[in-house]
Amino acid sequence: MQRMWRVAICILVVCFGLFKPDVFGVNKDDAASDQKIVQASAAAAVTNDEAMPLLTVQASYDTGKKLEQGKSSAAASSQNDRVKANSLGSEQKILYLTFDDGPSKNTEQVLDILKLEGITATFFVLGEHVLKQPELVKRIVKEGHGIGNHTFDHKYDRLYGSFAEFADQVMKTDEAIYRTTGVRTTLVRAPGGTYSNFDQGYFDAMKAAGYQVHDWNVDSGDSKRQGVPASEIMTTIKGSKIASKLNVLLHDSAGHAESVKALPSIIKYYKDKGYTFAKLTDQVEPIQFRVASKLKWSRKQVTQQEVDKLTLFSERLGQSSLSAQTIKQVPNLILHRGEKSLVLASSEYGIKNGAIEVSLQKLVEWIEDSTELELNTDSIESYVSTNQVPPKSGKEKPVMDEHKKQIVVPVRETLQKLGIAITRYVYNDTDREIWITE
Ligand SMILES: [Zn+2]
Image (cartoon, rainbow, N blue to C red; front, side):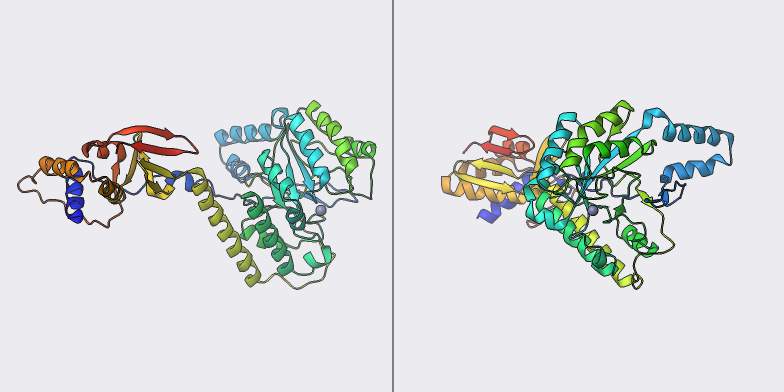
């Protein structure tokens, strides 16, 4: 009996033109959002410094392409000029403050200062500190800053003794960050920087696995030795290079109270010079040191197996974070009828032309179920039977498979046809609930 009028409702709804053989459209587009990782390695040049290695600043993919086109035509050449003007002009000065080795208690004050100044920065955290100070890591993310991976324990001999160990620590830290904050980061900073630590194999492997490895082009000198005073940090900053894009290295680990002390002056110094502060993202072309001709370490070459392992891990983490975001963004839809509720996950409903759409089968099953208790089936059944429209001649009656979940119908319209009204509803980013007449 139940089964019979369920089919009848299906037919009714179909005949009223409500049939929409569509899958739920929720966030279909969002999910496909920018996943591209641009990592061109067109190398531009170079400054030298005793303490610091030769710098290789990677040109952006677009810039590189435009520069190439510039050779062949006048129009392209004017475009080329604009590109040059953009990258060197005073309007485009951008600065990335980066804090390594945290989080620690100093991170709290760094965050307070950044908040006060209304700017964002990037924190390259150590996995072991993430596990010890999860609240600070959450605060970093909550306050809109970038978060990056600085390996798990920062131990040079292990990290640079073999790529397998380096990759393991990257994975462990990625996971710690993701579990703590829900953020999947692809930003990495190599402890000690890449110079004479990374060989080309390390660079290639990280790139293949979708990471962006960021060195820096301004070293605040705050970790030259223990307790470098704030005044000396400022002197170093003022003596450092000025370019349209700066990545400034600082530390927020324990023992770096002087860095915290110097921070307001550092920010003021660069603000006065017209810099815009930003956080690193996966779209920012990394500043990278060039590969040293002689490494500090002797080790075997990176193997394809090691690269594959890291790549697989990285892809999987990326996928799970994407799907988690989708679930998080879209709350459940809950329908209430008296004491009975129907809870639909984000994948089980959608919005089309301003109307909430749900699976016909789920809706009908639930109404049957809630109607049963209320002994109210008669009205619906009579409604269904009197309104059944016989199929037009020559046209096949649509054959409905009860178990086809793709049959999607608008809730309000469908309920109306069944003589059920919506009495109240809440619909916002966090709550989606509908109350209907009993
Ligand atoms: Zn470090």
